[in-house]
Image (cartoon, rainbow, N blue to C red; front, side, top):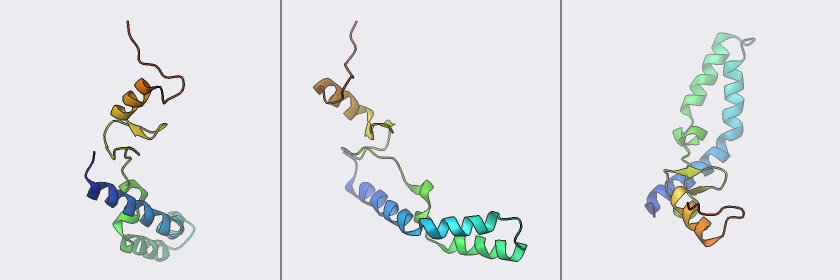
Length: 101
């Protein structure tokens, strides 16, 4: 089980990303628009830099839904490798069986 503080920190980041998504998208579009004057684009970059760092989507860490583990994460199932093996052994994942030879 991951530290509860790490899981909570990641949840807080997800909320911030959702809150600032529209504003960040607007500012990024303005900053990337070459038809606008350089001063306007630079001002958009400065406003973008003033937003909270944790409002950027790249700061979110993929974590297991069951344990909070950050490593060995399977995006399709949203669980870590340990839980994937455990759930597969219990027959909780349709079509997945533990191999043996």
